[in-house]
Length: 239
Image (cartoon, rainbow, N blue to C red; front, side, top):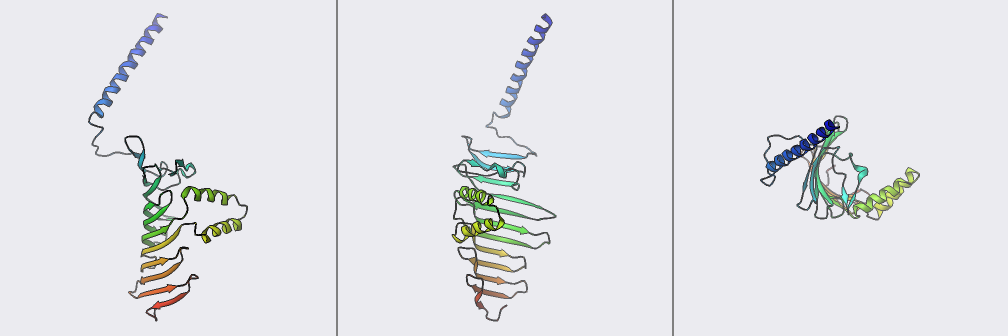
């Protein structure tokens, strides 16, 4: 019995000493405001926070990437599905864009720097989108965002419950016709046919003016109606 009591006293003393040593080491480590210099560091995720703990940036791999948050709701169903990169968050804690990248041999690769509308999705993107065959678009996209992201995600879940693909397609088309879905309005860059390109689109995302300098050096400008038919072309002989 006395032996057990001695061992317990020893364990208590050992625990107190170990705790004290750890406290001293942590105190020395962070005594200068936590500023330290490292030559190299391996991490899966870094959170940048304000003094009050609010999240402002996340740098993470795919597995540990933030799934997104709007109005205090974290979209856990997207956890582990988003590309690696850097995510930005506003004063309210909502995601407001990021710098992401991904790719593999079978699916192509790409990257994107985006900024989001308040409580919405991306309104401007600098992108590189490459297919497995090596063709790619690189440039700038500007989008209309007409529905809060949390409402769009709720609609998406409701539509997914519809029994047939035809019913789901019709529901999406109805939202599109009402101008509630994201619509790309401007596209500037180099297209997959190696042409320099400017496209101006209407509220439904349909191209209405297109300016190109093609890979062979020929320039052209086209005006299109809402059905995609060319109504005017400069020069008139361009194809």
